[in-house]
Length: 255
Image (cartoon, rainbow, N blue to C red; front, side, top):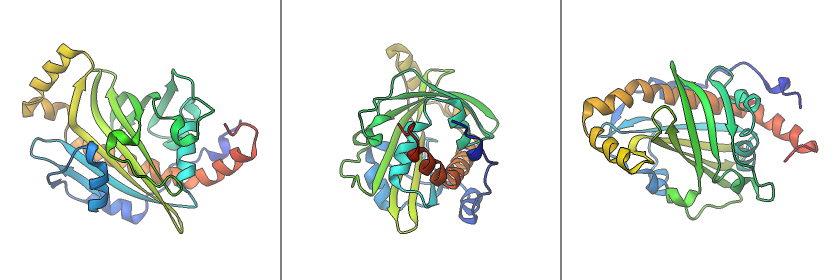
């Protein structure tokens, strides 16, 4: 399928996103990703929050006109296998994407990406990153009572493939409204750093207790770049997704 129709320059950010990017980093206590429901209900303000142990919780809200939660679930399934689809999302920062597992077409879109590992290369600010984004069930994030008709929650852990350490968790919580939907995006950065190798995991937990080590890998610059990247890609997605979804749904390649 020719995707050139949807390959458009990065959209300008709305004023609300610009205001979020201009905010100072706020020192605050916050709960981990396992308590996502409480965090959502608390009404935490958009921006960058930093804890006393120099971990971050980053939040940005995107208002998406003419988009709904069903489209978002479809997108998180459809874009995974191909770089050219992934690059539509952020034409400047996204470099490549692939998956090594087969998507189960018998599952609804909401469940089709859960359990899939997405291997991506992208820029977060000036940092070139090779990442594995592992999609998880919302239950893992404490989200057990979602109304599947009007909400969805995309949950994942993020591994840095250069170090093989899990460095972040993410949640995109989407709720439909009269104009489309609202997406609340959350990133826990440096809160639970781990390595799949037991010995290396013990070493990582030891060394990341030292502020100078943790700040080398996880710092304000990375947090600010991640916030901007999310604001840009989600606002941009809202521009082309309605037409893309409509066109694909009409074709025989919708799955």
